[in-house]
Length: 78
Image (cartoon, rainbow, N blue to C red; front, side, top):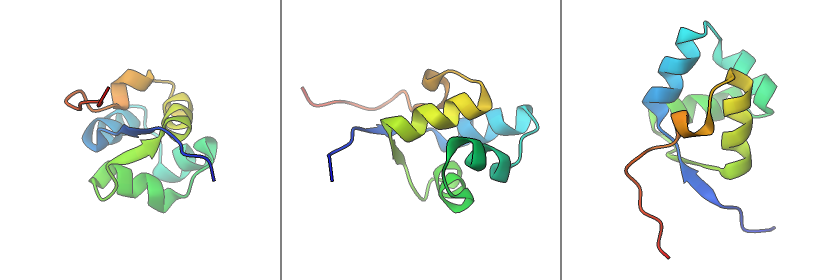
């Protein structure tokens, strides 16, 4: 399995944006190609990171920018 870059997800922002768009978790998950339970874990903070590809698919499913669901206060080690 290839190592995938993980990005920190802002679960609270993810939930707010989804609710503002009146989307159900099941709908976003289906569009993003992930399990509803995984989306729920991201929104509630039980999972704090997702692969870059999954984060992009979630953002696209909700028609929001990737930056809007990424946590701001993270540090990458160079």
